[in-house]
Length: 139
Image (cartoon, rainbow, N blue to C red; front, side, top):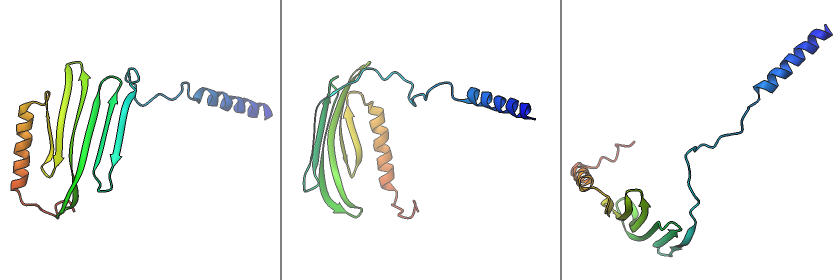
């Protein structure tokens, strides 16, 4: 009887050894991340009136800056008007985008934004404004 127990124990032990993970954990993102790009400069200022500015420039020349200014509270509460820009190098050439975000939505302009997209978005905004607001639509 004891030799059967020893053989069974050995079989279980060997099974456990072979069932153990054979490789370490793999990172979630397998893509080539490229070289590390340092931040060369950055700042962030939050003012008592809730306005703010921030900007950064990275070692590869990409940059972003943004300013937010609170505006008078409307029927949906207080809001912020935001202006900013960002730029970076892509394989197709430099990308530069400036934007405004306010009660009219996000409004980007730039050298790589196709005019047809801007026209389509403007049509959607006009259509949305033409429809009455249904407060109970989302619950």
